[in-house]
Image (cartoon, rainbow, N blue to C red; front, top):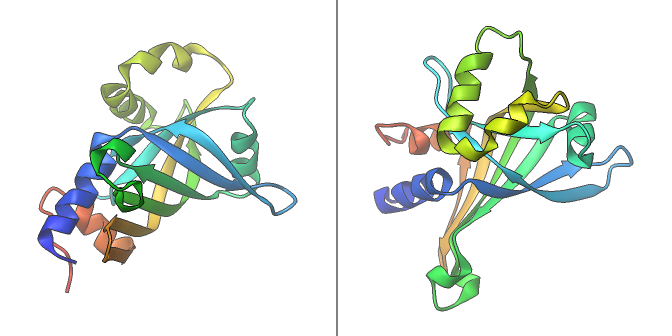
Length: 167
């Protein structure tokens, strides 16, 4: 993966804040919905994502039963002449709730709100829970002939401030 592809991947994830969320229903069927996310960087941990989800949403129940998920982030279809060539990344991961009494809850909340300040009011509603997504793998498509699968280490390197990918 070339340096410019790593930079494009990082920009795609960091500059957007909406994704299609894929979860698994109790019956084992795929389920896709729409969510907002923020990138989280904590000392001593790989970069991850934060989601603020309502207990009333089907996807939240799915994640509580099976924390595996997939997120699809895409560039604007208007960013290229051919919509088939739009940059996109499918992230695989595991989501766990960050409870309000957790020692790092305030930091996670501040991180989320730094990216999505208009969502402040949702934190006062009792049915919303913050989820932390540990990223396990990514499939990045930067256009025709530019597709790469990244394991957790390479994804972490691409999202790190240094951008240095392991050999």
